Length: 313
Image (cartoon, rainbow, N blue to C red; front, top):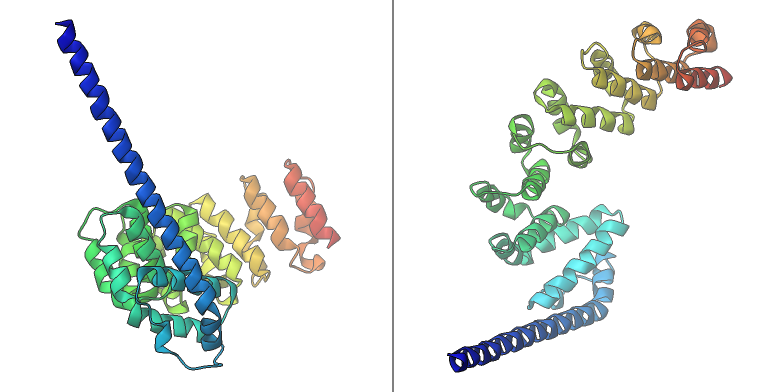
């Protein structure tokens, strides 16, 4: 009996050792492939980046030499394109990248969208928005038929905001997926004026986090045309909307109708009184002094301090 057990243990050790050796060989082989791929990609960048530079600058015409034949060349092109998009603001370069990508990179990123690997699909979704691959939008819509992760839904929504405003508006007002305020701000930044106007018309249909983010974004954009909309939000029951609207109006820095802000001087919410003090510094002292003097006696140190700064200014 002991001999049988001993033989079994010996064979188990041999099999386990063989499996470990095979796994080690697999990892080594994969590592060698990755090193080789990275080396080829870096070689491509070193060899072609100057040619891309001259093409983008209009110093020489497009050459068939720039059309990729291998995956490592596509990866090199991707790196080059991202550097230009992130560091140089040029409509002409963006248009050249868009045209090239929609002609020569469609098949590559289309295959990545169909991959079972989540990382490859996400990378394709990022590049669709980066390189404006409008020809893959229909394939993106097909992804909606499958179970998607939170990150995939967010990136698809960003793509729709660029290429399908109707679908974007529908998703924004009916989407059951909850996004954070930070994510909504990323979606709202860069939207066209027409899309923003349609969102404002459907403001009540938006999730609360999106409403807050939209008001914050309006304030950052400092668009005077948004003042009537923001002033209308001051009558909302949601205190958070009122406070953020006051903050956005302060960012714009223009008081059209002082009477709309006077009630906040005596608000029960100290944040509203604070924002009132900030807004009153945009009003000549003759019209604001009596309200600021009242705020100087506020129970909140923050409100008193802000009122004092407003008078000082």
